[in-house]
Length: 93
Image (cartoon, rainbow, N blue to C red; front, top):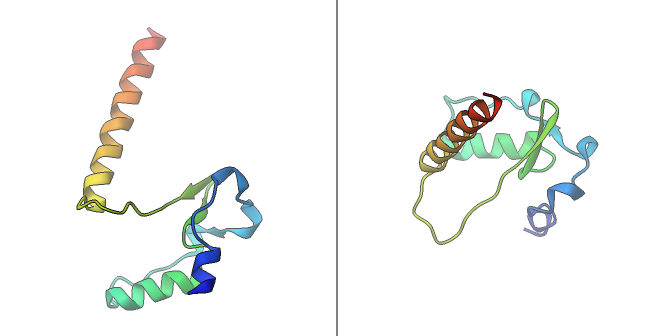
């Protein structure tokens, strides 16, 4: 449990790219149980809260006190990205 606490989400500006796993190197067998998939992910990653994704650092966290599913959050993200793209295109005109 102490090891997990030292990997709690931190300020993204303090993360060091060389200390993070590359998301492309993480392989999850979707045929395995959820518990085994989680264990596999944790064994393959240096920090389960942040990974290198191309030229970016992806940081994830958990929101307490909500019943939202990840699918709800992904739909919201897609909606926001769409709005951002529409606004950017209108600014170009």
